[in-house]
Length: 254
Image (tube, rainbow, N blue to C red):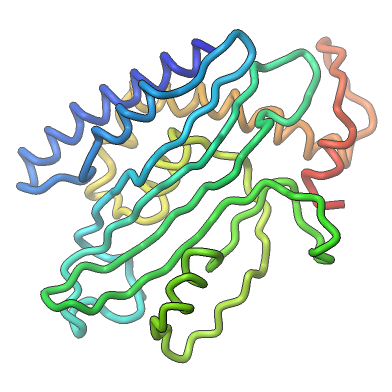
């Protein structure tokens, strides 16, 4: 999967350039340590059919928390929120004629949010994207890929006596979401957590959009087609698609 590695290298180079422009305009960086993204590109394991890598914490800094954030930043001395993306052992496979799972492995995909203050206390939240694990331990229906709030990161802090106040934190619902890699994970953060006034120059950059669109083709096209297969039994096209029926069924958590 040399094509994906080349895409990752282009992505890192472009973000480095755009981050420099952001610093020149705003006086502070949007991405805190893009060297970690370079490390991810350089250490990935590539062969003809797959690419496997880890991504250590790649941090995007939000200087202006989204509206309705609790607690309100202006009343609690919150200076900014650091939003970190981490991936553990993701393996992307080469697209095939057959519609099948684009990932053979995803051991961890975490997005953590931590406030930075002018005092030692901080607030914390965490989301993670899971790939379905078939186990007798869980009796709940899980789509093949799903986003969930909370999880191990918050549970570890709770075990260390971090106070989450009166919030009730439950590993539910498991919200269906297409699979993501490091490129789509960063794009998710920019779209969901960063005001367009600050992310717009990146999200509207033609080269950036081309990179994201290509990666969506690798990961989201088989996901979307597999999802549609649950509702359409015949296909009126010239592609004569074949399907991994188990993957298609698991997309909806059947």
